[in-house]
Amino acid sequence: MNLYKTAAIVTIFAAIEHGLGFLYRIILSRMLGPEGLGVYQLSLSVFAVFLTVCSSGLPITLSRIISKHRAENDPAGIHRVTTAAILLVLGFSLALTVLLFCLRDVFSGVFADLRCADLFYILLLGLSVTSVYAILRGSFWGNKRFVAYSLIELLEEIVMIVAGVLLLLFAGTGVGDVNKAGAAVVISYLASFSIALFYFFLKGGKLRPPRGEMKPLVRSALPVTAMRTCSSLTSSLISVVFPMRLIAAGYSSARAMGAYGIVGGMVMPVITIPCSLIGSIALVLVPELSECYYRGERKKLSALVKKALDATLLIAGLLIPFFVACGEGVGVLLYANAESGKLIARSALILFPLSITMISTSLLNSMNCEKQTLLFFLFGAAAMLLCVWILPSRLGAAALLVGMAADHTVTAVCSLVLLAKKTGRLRSGNYFLRLVLAVTIAAALGMGLKVVFMRYFAYIPALLLCALAVGAAECVLFRLLGLFDLAALLKKFRPKKRKRAAARPTAAQAAK
Image 1 (cartoon, rainbow, N blue to C red):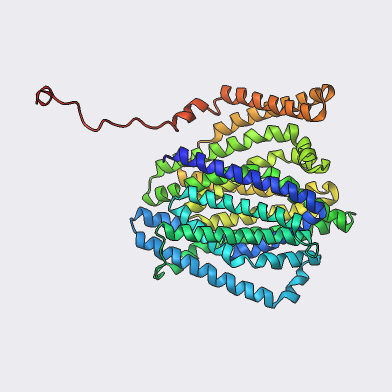
Image 2: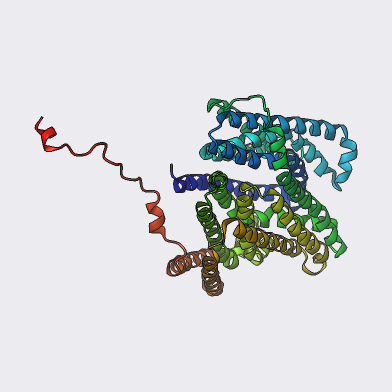
């Protein structure tokens, strides 16, 4: 299966998964309300810190080392390093789980709302299984089993949604709705772990003594783990600081938690729609990039980086005009919340730095640049925290989105500079300028047409017509500016003609 077909299949799975997750967030927002959603979001962000500490750096590092062993044709090394990763994450996650339960009375004081503490300890029950699952997923990634990787992720999402809806609708009233949603998350962790473990052994996965693999694995994983741990800590810190700064600006406690729930539980799921698609690009390209990097194939490396950046920019560029023109209506239709819609429309331009940060960090980590990406993250996090501390009194809930924009812009610029050094030069600058021109025209056209349509049509038909007009404008502009050639892309998916098994027989052979 060629690179384009693989990327297409993974992207389809990712789009379905993200769409289902997005639908589930809408269900939760309506069943839990902004305040309950804020509790759910806050508890998940704190749990994410411990999940990150346990396993976040190891899967991507494992996939890169597996790619290295593949390039060296060393299957025994693949089994050893996979075993090493499983032992590391299992031992650490079990010890951390026991410690946190022993210190429950003390640790619960971290949460201002006891509902958050109760939900956190429900989620903590799934820490070890989902940490080991992350390692199994990393082994699938490194061995280029992308379909299995994506399918199990999709099944996890489906299990969580089904379990969550059933628990919220039919479980007894003695358990809070937020805790029911947390129990659904744990059930989904158990399901994905069981399926991944079965598939791992089915496909010849073996556990072997991890001789010589522990130290290199830990040394490479530490910078990535530190970066992602800092990211989770930053999210947790913001989940505490942001409402606190809103309260200092005159918000009530309930209103501050509701504002955080709107941004974190309603706006962010929409703004991060491209992340699942970009993640599928990174999923397919990272093992290929790692092999090119270790083989010293710099020309091929540069070409792959350009493809990744261009595809990432295109995904972001496709969505920005829709968010600018129709974002307010999206918030009203999905969440019955006008404030979320306004914030979606205002934050549309975050998509460019957000998307670039996501893909460039994955690309750099595949080239053994974990320490540099950690440093870039710290620069961006500092910018975000500064905005969240200073701006809530002036911007309210929008301060968090401004902070995100500052964070990803700083990280994206630093990452692109390093990518240019690693590959010789970046060849996506001209593409980006043409894309910005197309996005600007399409967004301006959409905003103008929205005003016209709203005068003559009902709200939903006007919104639909506006979205169709933006889509048509993008098709024309992207084609005219040479940003996307559908015919050329479709050729990549056509099966190649098979070569003839043998040459035509000679006259003498035919006579026989």
